[in-house]
Length: 275
Ligand code: KIV
Image (tube, rainbow, N blue to C red; front, side, top):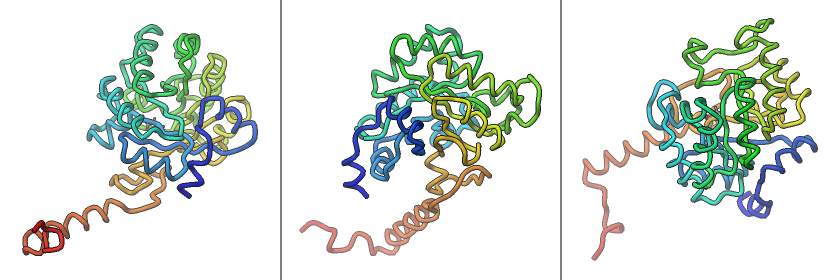
């Protein structure tokens, strides 16, 4: 699988449109450092998202709101050192783009200088002007609608959106408007998070840009998950994630074996010692 992956050309922004046109599903996963960026790239993902979920899975925060732009700059730098075949998307954290389109451009330039090939921001209609400002200066943008984790306090937690009719925040009609606004503003793709699968299917059918789902059912043009959930490194079990391995238990067992051998004197043995 490794050599096959590397024979495939670098994933670029236009490639996402091509994949949607051909009906090829897009696999996106998060990574926050060079070690895991190399691993997921070898596994053949199309897009690496340096997500602000780093705040929860690496920094131990309860939500993504405390993540700073400097943190994202640092993690994009680490991931870009893997020189992946996958497209690198850098997440704009809360407070780094909401003030004005100019602030969004300045923050995005910092991520692009570190190796991001595209940025992601949360919000639909309200972010249209900002997305336009970014795309005007050739900064490709992935939108993010539905359950937008940076709206944690407005939503009252990480809650499924778009279940009811009407135009209230999070309503079904509002989400369709958000999806169209993001597309019309020039985004190259949109993450659709935490919405009923029929609504995600409807959005996917109506948009010409790819939808990347998380907790949005199987009909999106692609899927994204948080790496630590996929590998079983987090202790959370969420309905919309899938644990494909249990590295948490393996990591604990391996470290416990080291501790035992240190304590009973069997590590290091002669073979691992210098003479
Ligand atoms: O930060 C992140 O990991 C994300 C995904 C959940 C889409 O935004």
